[in-house]
Amino acid sequence: MAFRMKTIAQLLGIDEQLSVFGRPVFVKDLEGGVKAEANRDGTTFIDKDIPKNEIKEAIVHENVHHDQMQQGRLGYDNKNVYWKEDTGSPLEIHPRALMEEGKGSLDWEGEAYDESNKVKNKKNGKRKK
Image (cartoon, rainbow, N blue to C red; front, side, top):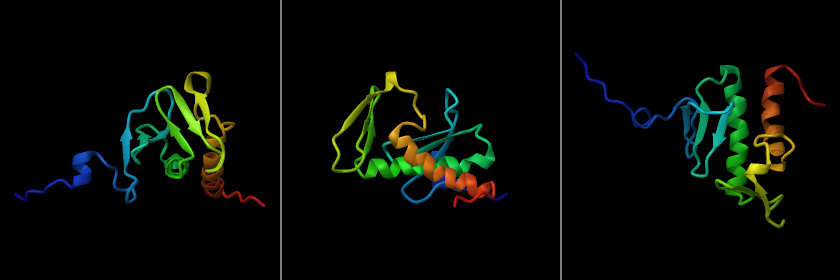
């Protein structure tokens, strides 16, 4: 009988197929219809019930948020989301209690949806002119 050791990713619960270096992806049970989350520590959580055909789109979307955080343009805590249009702009503070998180009309979400929609449109055979 052969003995197989688990990989580090298996021990930590990292999805090796979805992860890239520096941005591990964990499949979890996310609440409230949330499909995915970008975390300040560089990890991404993907909901365990997300349809398979939406996973790549969700990861592209969350990677935009990771990039925004690395650039110092996006931050958050339990009470607020902090946003800067660019690194020279003043900091905007958006109370989380007053917003519908994930809504495309939020500046930081608009940028993320622009990128994830490219994946969605490519998948559906649509091309923007």
